[in-house]
Picture 1: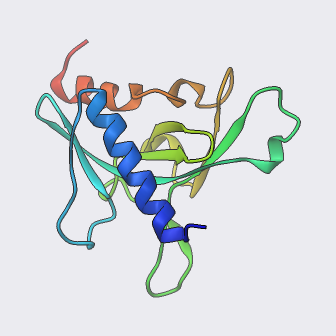
Picture 2: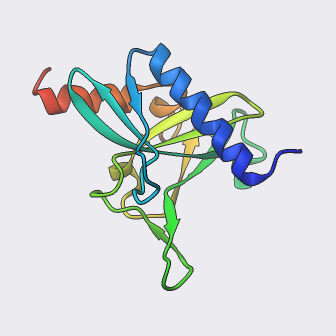
Length: 147
């Protein structure tokens, strides 16, 4: 069985591949000092992305369609507590579920300063981000001033 770091590495490789297939360029920083794991680029617009585990939310066991939870936090090195990412650190959180082979790309702003958020697979909160790169496309469009 893979350890947590191996799973995190596998998630990053899978997400990078999907992004490339979707027409984005993907770069990885040389140092581990940044809070993002990738720079995702399209049409000259660079987006800082963090990749996290997209896991089923146990609060929604009886839901007719899957509901997932995605984490948007990092560990504070002084306190050891989980703190939300800042807008200067990350633009988008991309969650990937290895077992179910599904993803969601949620803009950091959508977390509203919280450390996690739910993503519905169908008809519900953030369903528009499930299996979609629309958040990234919207960021590119907004940065270029396109409609």
